[in-house]
Amino acid sequence: MKTCLVVDDSKVIRKVARHILETLAFEVREACDGREALDACRVAVPDVVLLDWNMPVMSGMDFLRALRDADLPSRPKVVFCTTENGMAYIRAAIEAGADEYVMKPFDRETLESKLQIVGLA
Amino acid sequence: MASSATSSVSSNAAAVLGALLEARTGQQLASYRSWRLDTALIPLLRERGLDTLDQLVALLLSGRDPGIGDRIVDALVNGESSFFRDSAVFDQLVEAVAEHEAAGHRVRLWSAGCATGQEPLSLAMIFAERQADQGAAMPEIVASDVSEQALARARAGRFTQFEIQRGLPIRRMMRWFEGDGGDWQARPDLVRLIQFRRQNLVADRAPPGRFDLILCRNVLIYLSPATKARVFETLAQALRPGGTLVLGAGETVIGHSDAFEPCRRFRGFYRRVGGEEKLAAA
Image (cartoon, rainbow over all chains, first blue to last red; front, side, top):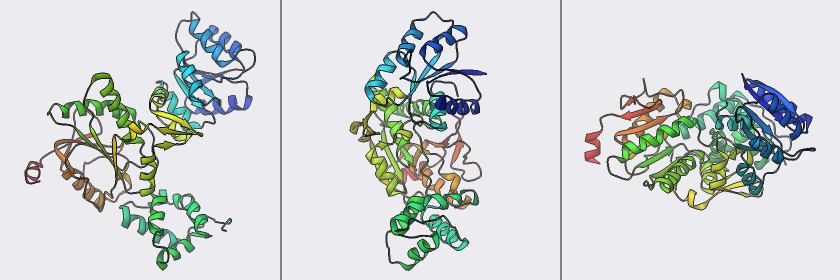
């Protein structure tokens, strides 16, 4: 079963994302910020990380840079999922190593489409 | 003001609206699609200050509103679309176009039933990128739809945040679109690669000239067998001998036309057989 780590400080977003991802046959884990997410990736690397941008403790961008620098057994796909919808943010995320980008608000079709693009749905 | 516009569908209204749709487009309002009446026409009811579909039908039949038939048809045709729909098709398409290019002429593509333009824009992106990266020739791209409203949106090249995220990889979005007030606008040089034209597949002649490859995906599923056969004839006449027809997943020519045979290499692709005499006479 494919695994997805949902990283978002909003419990509601995590719940919605979990519901959609489980219907797409993903096993879902959750983290509230970048630091928790990094710890989770060191324990078990997921296939894909669905990543918010603005979070306390460690932002999505800081997490992404740390993840790409980390010595992990595999390279997870990273799909940003954020309300930062400007082109400058999108460009910065892709340059930092994100694979795809979901602009909030999102629905099932959007998420499924983006996961298909990264080869996971 | 018709703030109380509802979705009550009498059998009379459904019959008249279904007949209008079929007469104009060949599409059948099969029972599994009748729900579309409920949702698709409410904005038009509100715009015209009507409360029920029966009132809309009465207005249609009265002849007092000459444009109302077009507006109803525009609202009812299925405009569901996404970028790079069934993405594997586009990989095969690039190979098929390269095969046609081997004949030494500029390849012509027709996106028949292009709705709001995601399919021809997807074609324009892949072939413009191929031209930039490999110096390959840019095929001519013609796109048509029965709905003037859908075509106006296609020509504008403007998409909502939800639409832009259906099937379009983010790197391509960055390359070909610009954010504009919450929507996303295709670059003018991309849109200019496409010739848009209104065309009713059931009633009109094909766009002029012969095509090497026609995409007609997820259009024929709404047509009766007799109408399908007529459309296949139009498509066959529009294709060069040996040309390629691409249908949607679950669609087939088998049982409807003997002018095509399945391509061995590409699933969902069909090769035009025969037709040399007609080409010579054209």
